[in-house]
Every structure is written in structure tokens, then in C-alpha cells.
Image (tube, rainbow, N blue to C red; front, side):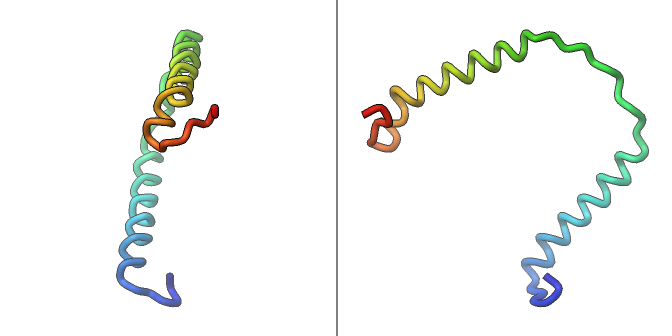
Length: 72
């Protein structure tokens, strides 16, 4: 970025730098978060929902969207 220095790159990566610095300063002022006890229910729901969505995409949506069935 320093070698070419075009305005688009300077704005894009400069904004990343500003965001990182502001985020670092902001995070250093916060304390530790309170511990949260989480049960396995959310993991089971995510696993089942992901498997169902994968099956729906594999069987119906892939052929509909792309014209080629991965099972054929």
C-alpha cells in the first residue's frame, strides 16, 4: 500500500487500521464479562437444523438453483 499509495487502497486499509485501533482502545477499558452457563440444547438444535438444511439443499435446491443434481 505504501509503494503504490492509490487513494482507494489508502481509504480501505486505513479504515481497517482506524477500526482496529478504536476497537483495541475500547476493549481495554472494559472488564471481564460475566461467565455464562450454556447447556447442550443449542448445540443439538444447530446440528439438527444444519443437517436438515444440508439435506434440503442436496436433494432439491441444488438441482433447482444450478441445474445439476449432485446425486446423479
